[in-house]
Image (tube, rainbow, N blue to C red; front, side, top):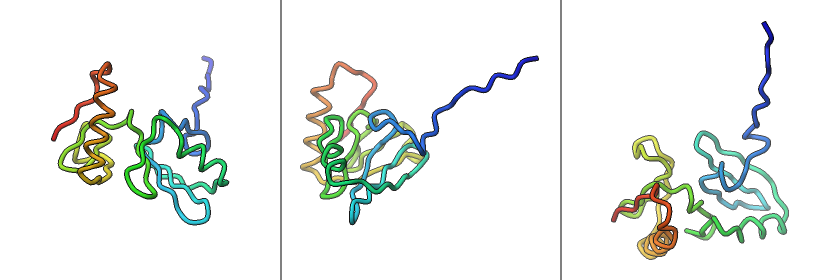
Length: 120
């Protein structure tokens, strides 16, 4: 019998920003905290890297230091963004009403994808 070792990608070392990260927060002195479905990773980045990160099209700024991945949102309910269909186990970020309205507008622009659901 032959054993085949599959090369799996280590999410902690090599993560894809758009597919793996739900949201990220900027910290002091270039520290960035990436939040995925089952992990939180902190990395120190240069000012240029942070500038590129904050200018990503798929991320939207919801507070002074927090950017969410629009493509990973499953539900918005009462000012809270949920990143999983199971609300009880979902990672979540709280937003104010104005930001919630803007995010809902961004979702209406992405109306071609039926997998997202926004509630009021």
